[in-house]
Image (cartoon, rainbow, N blue to C red):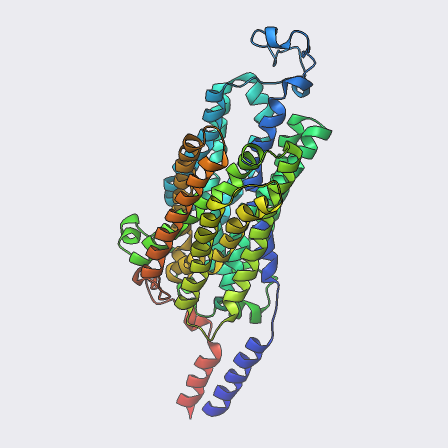
Length: 499
């Protein structure tokens, strides 16, 4: 009797594994668009500020007296409608409006560390999504009322940047089967590239075709829609989702003993433990190098195309999307590939993909630094190439974070976001100081600095990388649910005793 029950249980397990279900991908893509449109709500200011500063489209503009009266005209006068108001921001005001967002992101990391364990990612992000939607809706009103208050608003909406990658890490740790972590990492972290890909042309279309406030209203509406989808469909625990099949749930939970630990017995990981883990420091080093270099595509490429290559702005707007799109596609393909190369040890795969990304990009930046622009499309190709190669990183340090941090991935990803913001802040001051005239000769030095940072960061990662979960990921206690989930085993033991 005992043997019969055991055979029956093995047959059930085999059948569950052979039956593939794909409802978990609803969570994958809902989370992807949720993160993307929240980030797009923050990025929408990059488009909005161009339309807001366009004094030539103001009803107060007079070509004959513009240069004389520009400083005395109140471009955002109260008698004007929001659509007709314009803002003649100074360089300092523009700097403050951008810096406030990044400052909010850096402030949000310790905030996340304190709030997330108490509220859970689902409730925390539901609130953050509603906050982004409301912030976008009131952007036009606040900037017209008070610039200092507007800076505070930018600080508040910037806090969402601190939780985007942490949310991706939490969803991957809880929802991704172990053999699909690479593709989940690639897709969910791909919101960083997708959001500007969407926000730039969409914001430009709304600003040119409707009005500059429409840029914020439309992004606020999208943020609200995806937040509602997140609230309705996502759960912190896959076991609480009723529309998942049992076979798919077993596939998700396989190898995740920490998921069965009672919530009350889980503890947030301390920063000190993270700092004492060499593999975590290695992933953070690679993260810093990636963000430092990819900022060229996100922030500075349009300036390079305009000043060094002398492209018209209409061409720059089109060309700047190419590396981001290719980077996203390569990122997803690499994530899928990293899940299928089972013949190569996991840590070796991580080192290979990370080295292709960072070393490959470094070599390409060196080549770009020696390239003399000649007016051909090769001028674009040599600077697009190093950005595209960075897409291979999805099989490297982000996957390593998920593998070694397991249930604590959100905390590790949150600090990754902090380091990313630090790299962006450093680059925001360093690059402009090295390129005062925007010539290719000045940019050549920037490209070589990018290359040096990428090489150093990748060497650190390859030295410290591991595919073994850190000691602090071990389950804090034996899960009481395991006994309840094995009724057939108990029945077998009862039957054996009766015999």
